[in-house]
Length: 368
Image 1 (cartoon, rainbow, N blue to C red):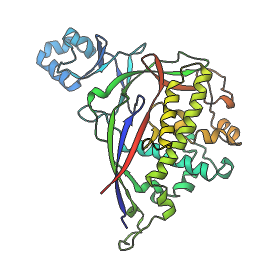
Image 2 (cartoon, rainbow, N blue to C red):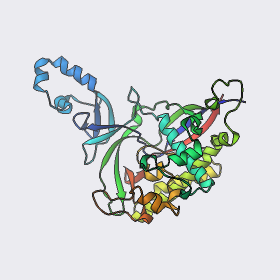
Image 3 (spheres, rainbow, N blue to C red):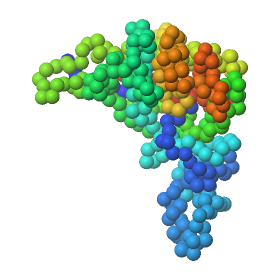
Image 4 (cartoon, helix red, strand yellow):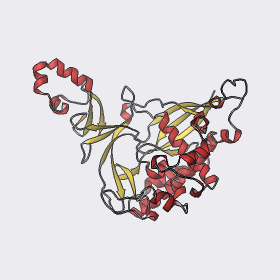
């Protein structure tokens, strides 16, 4: 019996994908806009360029933003530019940076992908077992509200957690040319404009390769190396890729159907959600393999929690909605009615169509 099962995940980006670093780029300090392009400045080479100009020049330009100092010398192929993004920020001077390697190539962190898979598996078990909120004692801190749920489903300690066996590496990077500048707004029926955000994002159609393995030896008692199998077959079955695909498809369908209805209610083009649902239907009929998953920025409350499964729970209004203060309208004392929650979505403007963020398609394959 193999206790370490290797696999590869072929990942294709379906809608703009942003996995952030937490760093916000500032215009003229971190980037400049030239001829409809956003040019990311190379900090180290800029300092070398300043040093070459001499001490007097450095003193005269002290406190002046780098983009203003460089001025007309900046261009996409300049050594002072790390990379260029098509497009320019709209109505904002800030850009949220996405994760990249040391050569500015985007990649998918294994931890981010594992978190999205964990949520899908959790949702599937919750719905299959017909769990109810009344069964659990939710935590006071909203950041750890579902800890008791996760402990019962995955394991009561980090050492016993089922997902400890799932080991995912960071993906191989894609090229710089796969990056673009996404214009994002938070849209609701009451606020169609929303606050503009600019994101570094990975273009739809980009492909990544992720390697990993399922390691059952992670559950061996200390010093016991001669016994085979420390993961019960029921729990091991939850990590089979066929079962994970079933879980991810079911969760994606519930999410997409709800977002489709929301888009029609708000009055925006629902075609992007319709197309994703059509992909799901084709996969269900065996036309191609794999499953969809949403991850990264823009997944929202529905994507990072049990989402639709909670909204239909009788205890949701008191146990979750009121307790954790959900539905508050920003800069207002008003609240979204619980039946309309969540009222808004973050969408990326691609051409003339608003698209959801972070949808990818995964095709797993076990390897020797």
